[in-house]
Length: 394
Image (cartoon, rainbow, N blue to C red):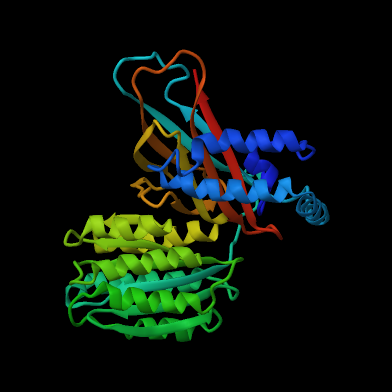
């Protein structure tokens, strides 16, 4: 385990490693991750950047001593952590003339001390609701959404932050970002939402992200929930670009489609780019329980801004990445980082990878892929934690 940036962990060496060991470790990783060799996998490029910084830190005696002294002062044996476990579909592979497929199941587990605890965790939320109030939401849909929003406000503590945006072809700030103190006044504002207009998701999502930014903080679960029952008009690319910005800032977005007339691939894309979830809600009556369950899960967060990068060896192709648990959904791995959002205190995150191995492999052990999981453990003073797993098969 490594808190923040741990060059020893990144290079896979002991803290008392000699200079020759540092050089050997760097060369071994560079043969697999260097962009000149592994140019097809974005994850390799990103990981090699960290490997280079780690090498430059440890190969310089002064920089290494400064790092060791700084790390010794802040080391905390009681700090919480998460673990990364990789299970391949095969322990051994029979060499064949043609390519063959294997699967890797990556599982991220929260600290067992948290899993064994009986007390309920209450992470602080910076929560934004972005609610579609277009004409198609008229009737029971809008009423159920209002009931759900009011129940969410009731469930939040005074330390939580709430903001609510309603949108059609323009956005309205129903509740600007504010600590949840005067609950009756906040719920009164919810009651004033009324259906009208068409559907332009970017209008609502943009204002929602802006409201979430006002209290954006590393100790908070910074989350936007988008609920819509229709297709947006001509602003999909702007929404996706905004989702990328939100992810870079540490904001996750969950997208919920109500009824049957909405673009599932579009909402999947928004959510997967930020580590949020995308969900189909089949009826207005299901909205209340679903939204409340979602917010309860956010309150139970152990770690935030979780992500996973995978760097297969140069001759191996990454064909598929799919989040299995806690909420199944496809993942995009085009930029090398797979955002995973929140890790709950007692539920692991599971991701399945499909890899194509080359034909005509030689007998013996060979490396397959290097995976790095990162995230912010909310209770730790030094929050950022990274764990590395390097997979080899026979």
